[in-house]
Length: 242
Image (cartoon, rainbow, N blue to C red; front, side):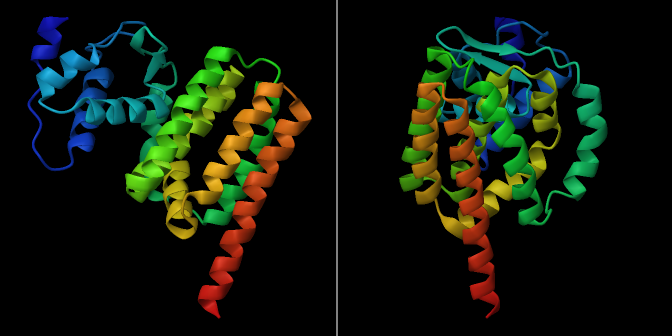
């Protein structure tokens, strides 16, 4: 483990999170850490890279969104079995070209898929799953006051990715990972247009609904969340054009 960590390079001051993310991603894609293997601890990574734990955690979260690593509560970060990585690598250039999809088309997709996803999640969610969502929600709240739109959007995005993971449906999870760039770009646009107040309100309500395990309630709450987002963005654009 120590020898592998020693191969990582010290990070420059600018774009710390991006540099950490790219180094770790490159190591993962090169097979330095094998599927199922535990990554070095946050302390080891901090010491090797010369950055803070906040920076390392942000990079790990981005790798988790991509489906490259899995965070196990109280046990650390592990390399996932990325059977779809080749497909992801093939599609990734195409996705980047089209990442600036019209925000409404992305929201229409999310309204269908995420309503169905949370319907799958509701009856099978565990207390550990709820704890992870609560942790992500706390990050969202903290970033709403101090973070940049990019950071705020990443935390929001992670919340929805966690729901996909909890569904335990491999197709839903893999599609989410494959179009991650499109979803991420749209999330940043939403935060820039609407801020974080509405998102925080709905995410709190979504967690509370999931605690009841009521499928219909969870689906209705998710649909309301995305529909209000659609309506507010539509009104914002109409106002801008007027």
